[in-house]
Length: 255
Image (cartoon, rainbow, N blue to C red; front, side, top):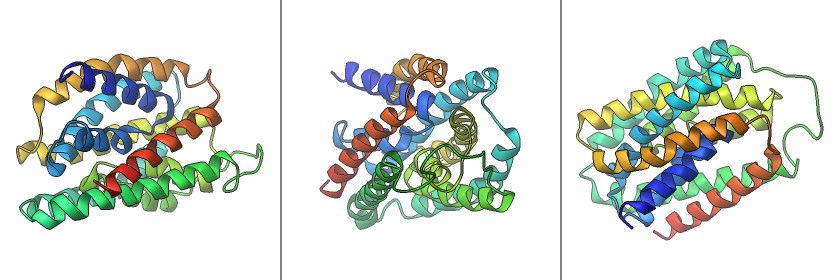
């Protein structure tokens, strides 16, 4: 089970990353904390390393499928990369703080996940965002920088936000073709996770064996999700993902 469980989790999460751009940190970090009993800081570093490699592979495939706006990725990265570095450094400098690592961080993660799941549910039922199909509405560069900075800070501290929070904000406030939104979110997430993971790798805060097992499942899953992004009902997928994220958030609140 120590081998099968992480491979299976990697397959499921990789598929969701390729299909929706979401679910990496939002599902993998709680899995590592709850089912694998990994130290919270080690879980964040391990998840970021896993997510970086998975999203690089998925991002290459999205680029081949012409699902990526590199201009939008650039503006999001302008906000997210500096804020993720600062977030990661803050956590690493306080990694010996027992209260922060064992009490605050898991519950903070849980609270973020619950809020994100409620936003996704509201979007699924069209209580937020466009009520029906509307003209394409791209974010301005300043909006992409702000969205990137919010997601980046959360990624650096918790490994959550690069896909889930950023996608939730884009879904609520803007109308972009979904395949393009997923593609640019995955490519941006690859850059963001790579930078954030490097901080934890240099500090020795990753479990390399666990990363390898997760990747064995996630890489084929991410490839399959990328292929299916134009062929599946996204509303159903978002609803399922919102349920999974809500469950993970509630579990972490009582971790």
